[in-house]
Length: 351
Ligand SMILES: *Cc1c(COP(=O)(O)O)cnc(C)c1O
Image 1 (cartoon, rainbow, N blue to C red):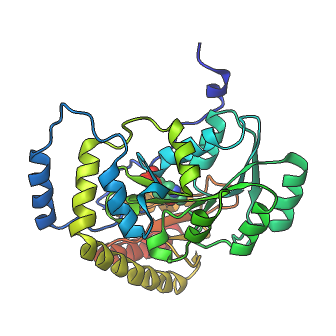
Image 2: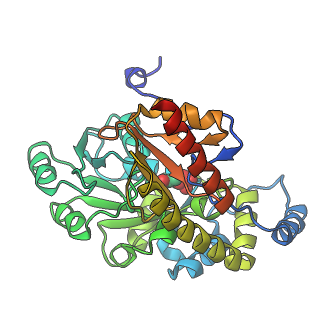
């Protein structure tokens, strides 16, 4: 018999509508260059697919460690950071103990808690999308929690929470997960805390810097913490092709990644200025590779008007406090131009 818990769960929703210009999943808009793909093919030819991959992804952890300036002992890899979020919800505290989540945010934190039947302390962000500290402390005092998740910067609002607020909540004894999926776009990090403290880990991912197809997520923490968390990790969670491809790209493709990220950051600031100048549109400042914006019209109608014009963005209005909001990922300059003119036309046709 399936658990009663399942009837209360919803499967993770992704945006699957067809459209030529896809700005809905915060991917890097640039695919890796052809020369790199040739190198990858050469490495893939050598693979023995009948063999299991290295269960510890040792070489890849060393390369990622160099990339982040962290020794490999401080790293655990996941099949995407989504998997690592599951592991943390399994491993931190007991299932009857609460999980603190400032909302609206990335849905996986709630989903992982719900799957395990863990109580949640979800506290609405303030109107500035920063953590509501007073309300959080009050709720934590009455309901209690042992694990906290922060998307830093926050997906989908794009802002960085105030560091001191995260620290104040951590002072109440919460194990703190700082999900830095957009680190390369924000430059802000809790890495030092993760290496110094047993109550803090950082999550990173290769998904938002050009390798979403590989599913490689990274947890950074103290060696004692990482080796305990390793006990819940599935043995061969990072596939052989993913390990090989990630190694090639991180060894030979750093220049490509750095240039691509720089272009996206420049475009983010341009798209933000353009949105701000658009009548009726409220755009929220972002430290990530996407921008949240609100229009006076129902988000579902704006969404379908944009799809009619071959542009796909994410409707965020289902999240609490984000009525009328959509999120656009930053694409190539020509894709962003197409989005901006499609949005102008859509708003005109709706008014
Ligand atoms: C996209 C995203 C992830 C997912 O990362 P994967 O490594 O692809 O699983 C994790 N956290 C946040 C906040 C994200 O936006």
